Length: 131
Image 1 (spheres, rainbow, N blue to C red):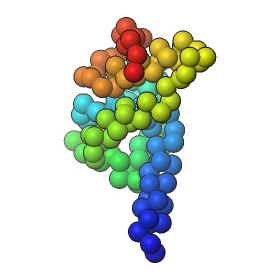
Image 2 (image 1 turned 90 degrees about the horizontal axis):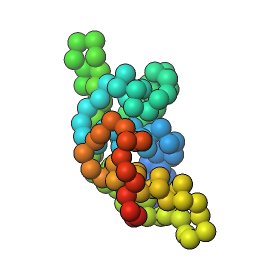
Image 3 (image 1 turned 180 degrees about the vertical axis):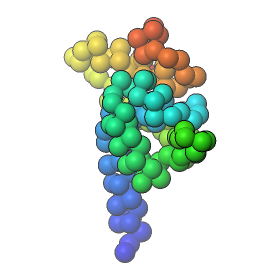
Image 4 (image 1 turned 90 degrees about the vertical axis):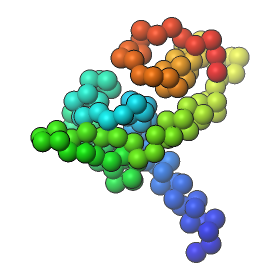
């Protein structure tokens, strides 16, 4: 199989594994280190079973690893640079002048929040001035 075909197929699998908003958020939340399912559930605001299903898929695609400590399981990124890569990708969704201010504000907040140390509230930060 030609190398370009093989690489294209593998990138397609990676993009497929990242193709859900919750999985993008999980990557962003894990940027500063390990978290358990309950912590991710609180941060994402989705059910425990949904978080577990997303983590399972991400583990199968070698995006995250787990560490067991007694009855607790902690998850971490295999490559923390993944968060930087996702933040860099935001430039491709930056709206033009006719798009809504809400999307522009959300993009600014995502860049600001995901590019820096974690804090516990998307809504608590002031929006960034722009990408």
